[in-house]
Image 1 (cartoon, rainbow, N blue to C red):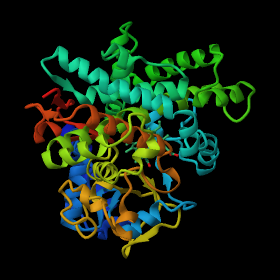
Image 2: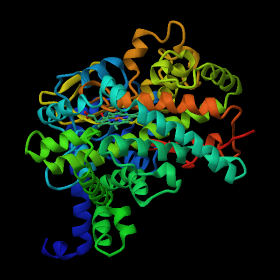
Image 3: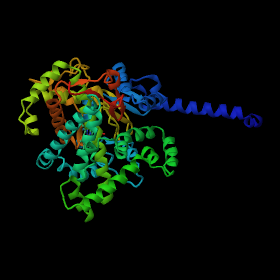
Length: 491
Ligand code: HEM
């Protein structure tokens, strides 16, 4: 016995056997063991992790739903759900399913402060939401921000035309929509213009904003990357810090912008009143204000610009639709407003269809099963399990959206989609955690796309804007895999 234990090979083999037995024991006693799903999801998260790392999570989970049905075990402790009852149950307002710790990891400030997007405690969240709901309401936006959004959408389309003239008629609309959405977010949150549209070049801050979710998303999966990144960011190279520690870089910018609010006389931005309250020590602390404001820049930039990019691409891929839309928006008066646009049937149908197929956040929204467990579609799921619902799959349910993979704005016209389909349609999330920026997003989508199809009649896709280049890359949000969408103007 003594000699056996002295043999390193025997010790190593015993450890391996012990680990395997533990995995087997856990697998066989796990309450999720009877759920449908691939055999490997009982034992390992690796295939899911590989899909996340390669930006293919939504496709991986969608394929599992198609094979195994509406409730699928996708890893030892994670279950994906795609039926309507499950969606209503998990995201019910006042329900007990909380956001999971995964959201905390996204902020990773380490000081216990979280933004409206990343906080998991319902009471804390409700208080924060109350504070932000009014400035993001449709009425408030119309009264205070319509002019700014209108001005910036116009400027975006004008600047696209100028950029195209300098490049033989070609322009990357994705880049210009991103300049625009970030300028809108900067003006609304901080009263500070990032001047992206004016400059027309990608700033360091914009790079941080557009890469942050990818970097943080991957480092949640591979914690050792965080450790290496931590060391790299100690080097005095700002580019490394922006790349590997985007949260720090982001909050630093947030602080700077907040100073510009405090220095400015004007109170015409969403955070100025909240910041004043915070200075008095009421409602929010200053650290919370800059955390929120920076977070809202992220939440409001790539989301709307990606949706606009896919909308532009989808319409330009269909000449008849393009002609009809150009015709509809050409009837508008020169001083049209967002209220005028809300009345245009085709424009709004195109927007809804773009959100259905290409909404920027179609991934599973992770929630934790509350104490006592839950039952979905006859399957018991124990407390603590992560359940996800992905809009990508709900929006491609053929029983609700016939020809689900086809871009068909006509399905939204006349009587529109069925009541059941409406319940399943949730490009902005669901329940108490639904998108607070939804009205702003719709306002930008309407004003920007109307202006584009009025001013850029006859625009065509450049050769580079292929199906392949526009395939979605998914790191929580989606972007075209080619990271651009080139269009030819002035044809
Ligand atoms: C087309 C554009 C947009 C899409 C598709 C979108 C989508 C979403 C989705 C799906 C969620 C739920 C996330 C979850 O449950 O984990 C969400 C939440 C959120 N969004 Fe948006 N969003 C868009 C634009 C915006 C804009 C313009 C802003 C603000 C400037 C914004 C701010 C937020 C915030 C703060 C939350 C968290 C709300 C909460 O938990 O109470 N979003 N968004």
